[in-house]
View 1 (cartoon, one colour):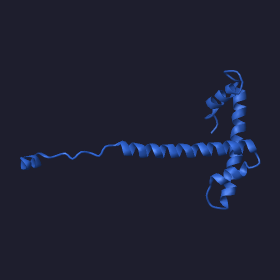
View 2: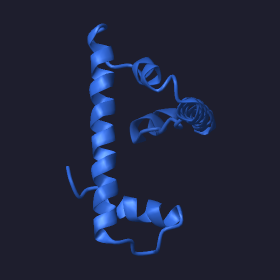
View 3: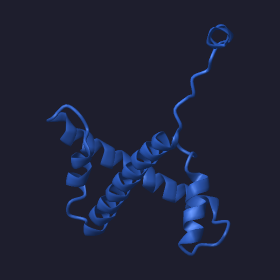
View 4: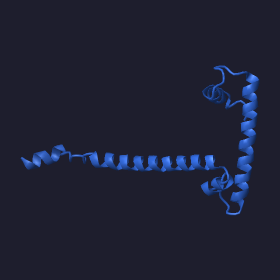
Length: 115
């Protein structure tokens, strides 16, 4: 949808050296170009996926295989994603190990029997 990325594009343009408040026309042009690129990319990925029946990471990597910078960046992000998954898994295991088992609560009837 047009207009959803305007705020982010403005921040990115500023981060890459544009003025703090870039012209609306410039932002619109960048958004149009980005949406067109993403649409084409998604269509090409779906064409690759049709052969197998489902879209997989390999389909995306296949499309960008000739662009070394994009391929390196995607591989880096995939590696980081795996590290995050592993860290979460380890954290959950650590949390589970540090939780004390619930103590048995004696009910009033049992206490009377013991005395």
